Amino acid sequence: MNSGAVLVTGGAGYVGAHTCKALSKAGYLPVAVDNLSTGHAGFVRWGPLVEADIRDTDAILATLRSYQIAAVLHFAASALVGESVTDPQKYYENNVVGSVALLGAMLKAGCRKIVFSSSCAVYGEPDEIPIREQTPKNPVNPYGASKLMVERILSDCGKAYGLDSIALRYFNACGADPEGEVGELRDPETHLIPRAMMALQGHLSNFSIFGDDYETPDGTPIRDFIHVSDLADAHVASVRRLLNGAASGAFNLGTGRGYSVKQVLNAISMETCECFKVGNGPRREGDPPILVADAALASAELGVQPRLSDLKTIIATAWAWHRRAHPKLGGTL
Image (cartoon, rainbow, N blue to C red; front, side, top):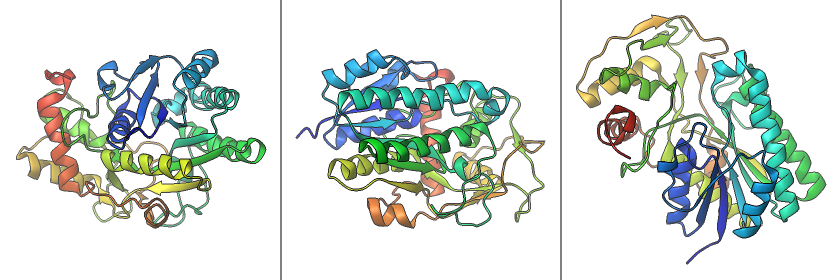
């Protein structure tokens, strides 16, 4: 039974496409909106694709009305931390101005339900681990600042216009669809696990660890890795929550367990039975030593429990995608 149409901005991207698949399985019609600047039309398989920029208010308004959109899932954003430092104007334009334009179209269309793709980057370098939703938010780069700005805008629009919103603060999204239909595909690729796998396959010659002198047991940063399909399930739960009339909120999406960069690389070697050379590079500015979520609130309020976020499953699904279905590496979508 169809549960209604939902608009998915950035629906041709990594997390957006996985979420479209999960929405379709749950009975929703995902209507992907993407300008395809970084997304892939081949990732849109579970509903229509509207090729448009979220700043094109007329196109967004027409889409909201023609599909009678019940809720919006907002993924569309620039998302490279390093680039946000060197080109902050791009990040405030795409992430903040774009979100304001999207909200304007939603309000004109009478759509007042939105799930926002936020980030643990809003916390900056936290003074407590694990990180709770109440942990002070002090982003250290324009990317994190742009996400926090949009959270504030959503809160203000809730008070002024009755907008209901859920902000989902991701930790490290990773892995690939277990059925192999979609995975990580970026240019340039910046994430640890796909970069390691590209290096294994000879498609990346400059694979390095960014700093091995952190105050952690093995000197490399510790992160909370959550499978992208578990993230997708959390978005479906959030849409359902809003459409059932629940209150707005913000939730961490992680597992509550951290792995160091070296632990992840060792796990990749064990899973793939391959060894690879890893260089040692300098620390990246703004990289905290440890980022691990307190995920209890999402579990209690959204009812989400990570099913695929053990490190073995994360690596196995990512490796299968890279071997079998990664277009850049000779596979087919």
